[in-house]
Length: 364
Image (cartoon, rainbow, N blue to C red; front, side, top):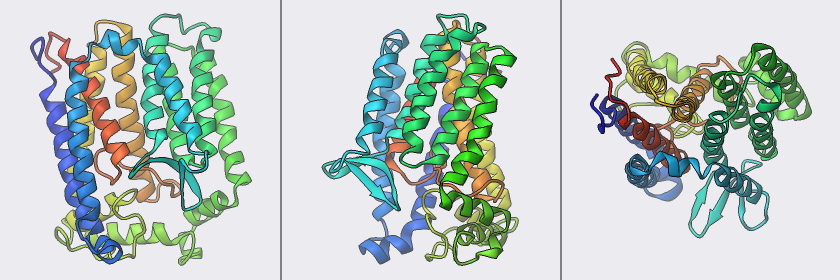
């Protein structure tokens, strides 16, 4: 890869994932969209709009001088906190399924927690590049901002994104060079917090029990996981064919968003799923190599953090739909329905591609 050229392999992998997302958002939502809105293209049209806005943002992000972006690291945290607080303001925050995770402006809505993840990465990248993270006192700002974001997000409540940010915090501390004993000091309270958060909310405990034995409550908490496993099992090796899913006919809740991978597995089978996993592997591997080849700590931490968000969130989504961890709402990057997620992730990819432009040597 020559100087001034973006990582084309990374860009192609992202474009293909977005295209796959459009196809399967349409497939997974066509029946429910027709039944609910009288328009089978309702969800995919909004997703296409998000993709267009996202790719424009990606292009702009590849052109922004990274030094100027670095100057916004505190502003990013402030904006993210304000947006996270606004979800609790009556008339601005939007409540769905008992959770306040969105804010609305006119006919548009955004999910602040999606923005907060990358604002956190930018803050950590700038701060950690200037201090010695081997000193315990120096890791406190990273932990403090992470804890603040986690506290606001869990209050929505949104345990899945909270877990994502908490894991991201540990990854950033590791990348920054924090000592093992300091990492363990952070990990222990995080590990203890998980069962506590489950116990204090009855629905989380019910989800955990349903995860352990979903067939004990097949019409209640275990229903979604069972339907997801039915979809994946029905797909077999090569699937039942594109647009031929049965689970999308209102059997599997959130088929176009959090559980779109289940529909993918049903329609194109294990082989198709492995191909998509390979695309995510390409994104993560290219991101890691970009981080390794960076000329300074700021760019290294920025590229590594962005890559970590993609890796962590996609891994958690795969784990949920396959029943490897208790069910929780978490979109699959680039693929699941959701305008905020798509635009934010594509913008982050633009920043990652921006970093790749500065590397004169080939990644492979």
